[in-house]
Length: 85
Image (tube, rainbow, N blue to C red; front, side, top):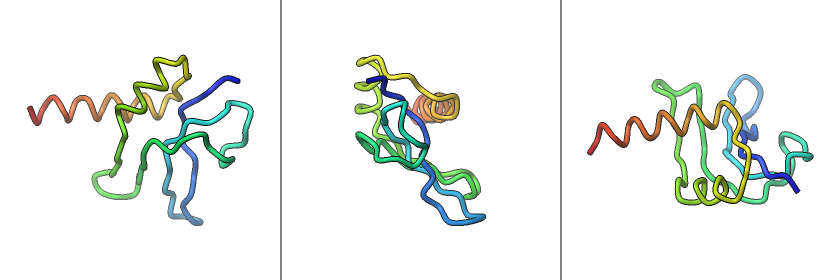
């Protein structure tokens, strides 16, 4: 089983809202995830997200592939974390 970290849409029409999930790569975009790792709301100004970074790091250490958008969110979160320290 190949695990991917990617976005799963849960918002309604014209109001996107996403979950960041660990899911089998063969499942559909909105299929049942193995684990929910965070949330992402792109329409908020600025965009809002929450991440369970320790669990994301666990899945990456287990060989999970990370989608481009999730990589970008992780990079932005690390940048904001460094600014607050």
